Image (cartoon, rainbow, N blue to C red; front, top):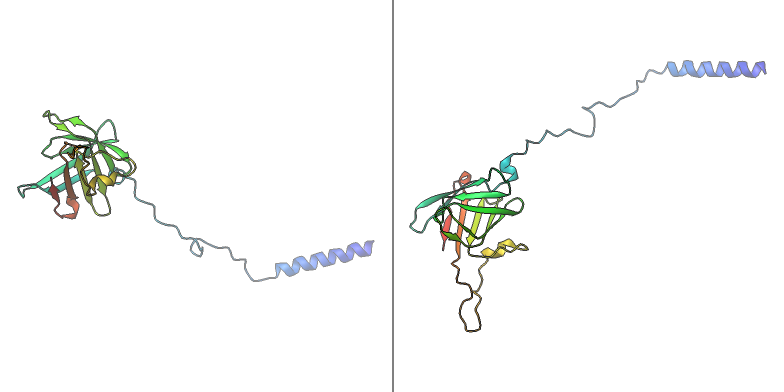
Length: 183
């Protein structure tokens, strides 16, 4: 038994001594050698990124005068924007689909003008604003308000809708491209 313990002790001592003699260092990966790279932090989320419709737009009036339309957020309710600079006066629009689809409800302006229901859509990829008064807001497909369509007629062949449809198309001033208006 003493012999077995002595042999086991010598073998253990030799193996520890052999392992201590190895000169090859253990490689620990560092951040510069890692296969993963850190990306820069994203910029903070701004109001302009959250509500891209906010800004100043330009469109040509019927008499070839350039007019600016300013869209700003309501101070108490971020789901409402105010449109200023149109011939109709100051108008309210309500956010329906984020980030830039709004319903223009029936309303009276400060001047007492009646505004029919409409749709406002901003395409941030093209910096294009489309605004329509007198067209019903379609919650499933809001862009249908800007598609050319035939006027619905009643049984006597007369137009059902006597509301005047007014459409504006504009471009954000940041791009420097003029826009157009059509009635």
